[in-house]
Length: 70
Image (cartoon, rainbow, N blue to C red):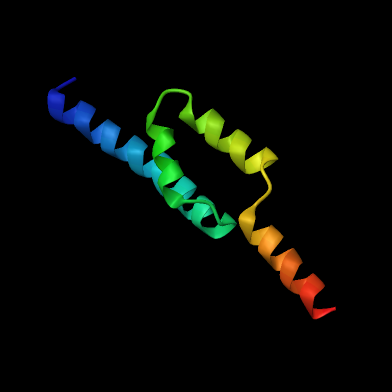
């Protein structure tokens, strides 16, 4: 495999992993820069655990606003 082929695979993998995690973190209220952990080996697992088990800032803000209205 040529050097150019390896570079193409790296760019494709980066786009495939970083872009979705960037959008998910942004919508959940986290810093989108956390998506760059997907480039580190094992980083995808860390990102999935964060998304699964940490309280989302967006939901806590929404809960605070609904309690304030009542």
